[in-house]
Image (cartoon, rainbow, N blue to C red; front, side, top):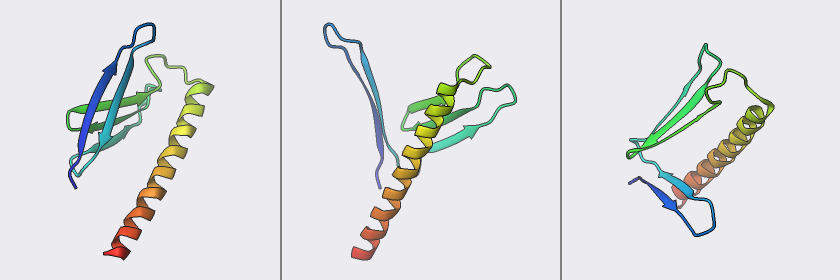
Length: 95
């Protein structure tokens, strides 16, 4: 598998800038979770020179919005995993 990652910045007149980081990982991709004693946990995703950090920010206060976002992230990651496992199994069966 050959992975690649890229970042695009789109600026359209009269609209807010849009930044997209696309990660299409291979074996060199890295995902890490860093729990912290300072109440600021974060996830670090890195591939092909692109890096995405997801955390609660510099404030020590974790809000309901943080919890809701984390639940959405978990749901999306679980669905992504299920689809990857299903597609991988289908491809292996077809080979």
